[in-house]
Length: 598
Image (cartoon, rainbow, N blue to C red; front, side, top):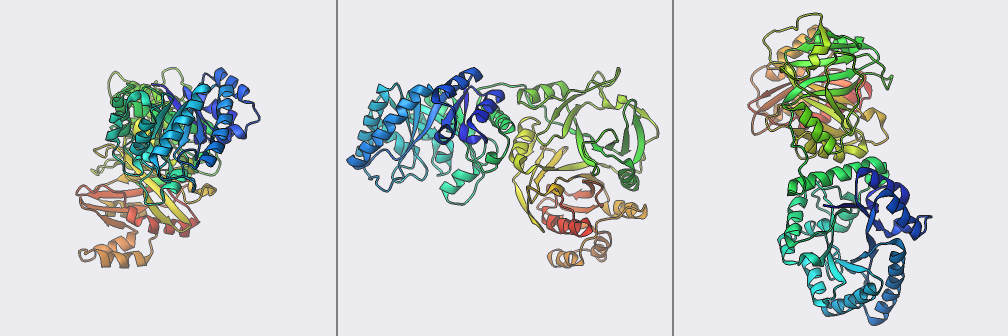
C-alpha cells in the first residue's frame, strides 16, 4: 500500500523535508500550508522537485473554518478557497483537507454545514480538486468522525468525502468500528498518528505529543483494519505534531516514520517482511575504552577472568559463568572514558534477524574482517550501539568465539552468573524511536514507560524484553537534553547470592556505591526483615524491592568512564528493575562524582 507523510511531521525547510521523505522510501507527501508559505520555491518548482524525488503530492492542508457560517462569512471563505484551489493546480495536488470549524461564527446547523460544503465541493470540482472533510477532536460543533460523515453524506457531492484521522478518533475514545459503514470510495484520505495515553486538553495533546504508530498507546492497527474493511484504497499517511521531531534531523525522523508504517502494515496483513527472530540471550557486551586498566580492575574484582584475546584486534574477553564482557582498546570515538559500544545477541536465526533488520530500515554495518574471521551479521541501533546476531557454539553457523584465542580458563565457583539486563541511555530525541526499533526489528516486548526523579530533572525509562526475560534492555533518556553526562550505560549481572557477590567484590578492592542511611530507615518502615538482614544491606549498599511475584536485591559499582555495573538477585519471579530505588541510586551517583546515570 502506498505510504505518505505530512511535511509538518519533519523538521527543516520544505526541500529538506521532501528529500528526507524520499530517501526514507515514502511514495508521497502531504504539504502543510505553512511549509509552502515559508518556501522560496514557486508551486511549480515544488511540484518539479517532488517529481524528481519520486514523490506525489497526495494532500494539501489545511483549509479551515469554512462550513456552517453566516452567508457573508461563507462568501469570504469561498474567495479564500478559490485562491487555494488555483494554487493546488499549480502544485499538482488534487485533494485538499478541510477541518471542521472552530470559528466562533460557526453555527450549530448540520443542514447549513452540508449545503455549504456541497457548494465548496462544486467550486473544487471546477479546479479538479476533491475535498476531504475531517472532524477535529476539538471542533466547535462537529468533533467526531461519524458526525462529519453524516454531514458529508447529506451534502451528497461526488467531490466531497471524508478524511479519517486516527488521533482525532482515538483521542476522543470513539468506536472506530463504525468506519466500516462508510463507503470506501468516500474515504478520501487516512491520516495516522499514535500518542501516549495522557489526561490533558486534547488540543495540547494533539499539538505536542503525537508520535508514530507503535510508539504510543493507541490501537492504530485496529483502526486501520476497520478502514481497510470499508474498502479504502488510498495511502497510509502520517500526520504527527511532536515537539521533539520538530527539533530533530529530518532524515532519521523520516526513517523512523517509515519503519513505523512498515511495522503497521505487517501488523494488519498488508506486508510480509522477514519474520522476527527474537534473541534468546546476551552473548556479550562490548566496552570500548582508551585505557583498559580501570575497567579490567572492576571486572577482576567482580570475579571475571581474562580468558581470551582476539586474534587480530586489541580486544580481550572477560568471562564469569555465562556473563561475557569484551574490552576493546582500539581507536575510540571519545577520549573521555569507557562506553558500551556493542551488544552480541544470541539469535535462533542470525541471517534471518539481519534480513528483518534490513527490511525495517536498520543500517547494516559493514565489517572489516581479516581472513578467517567469523562472518557476523550486525546492524546499528538508533543510538549507534552495534548489535551483532550471534550463534555461540552452534555448529554450522559463524561463531564469534572462533575469532578469539584462549589465554586462561574461566573462573567457576558454582554461581550462575549471566547478564541480567543492559541499560542504555538514549539521545533525548530518539527515545520513542529506540522503543519502536527494539520491538519491531528485534522482536522485544516493550513495557510501560516510567518517570524517575533525578536530582536535576526527570529521567524517563522504558524496558524491552523477551517474554522469558532472557534478554532485557532498559532504554532511558537523561533529564537534560544538553547535559552530555546523561549518556551513561550500565551492565546488570545476575547472581544467585548478591550479598556474597558484593562482599567478594569489596574484599577484592572494588568500591560499592554508598547508599544514604535514610534509605534503610525507610526500608525498615516499609518491609519486615529477618534479624540482621537490613544491617547487611546497609553495610554493603544493597537496595531492596518487592513486587507481586518476588523480591529484588541489587547494588552498584562506581562508574568507569560512562559505564557502571550492577549486581542483582531476582527471587520468586520478580519482573521489574528496582525503579522505586532509582532516585536514591541517582542521587548517590551524583554525590560520588556528579554523575547523571542511565
